[in-house]
Image: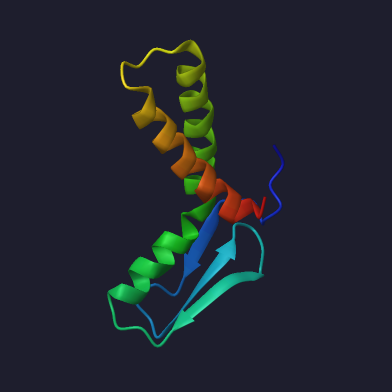
Length: 98
C-alpha cells in the first residue's frame, strides 16, 4: 500500500544540540524540529520520530501475519490474537486516518 506520509528513511540533524531536526533522507525539508526539551530526552524523542516510517512498516507487516494466523486458526487462544490485531489496526488507523 502506498503511504500518504513522507516516505522514510528519516534522518536526525543536530543530535545533542539545542534544536534537533528530523528530515526526509535526501531532502532539505524538515519533518519536525524539536527544541526546549532537556537532554537526553530531546534526542530520544527525535530518534522515536525518525523511526516512525520503520515502525509503521513493521506494524503493517505484523498485521498481515496476525491476520493470516487468525485465518488459519493456528493459535490455541484466538482472543489473544484478536486483541493484538485490534491494537495494531488502531495504530495503523491513527497513522493513516482510516
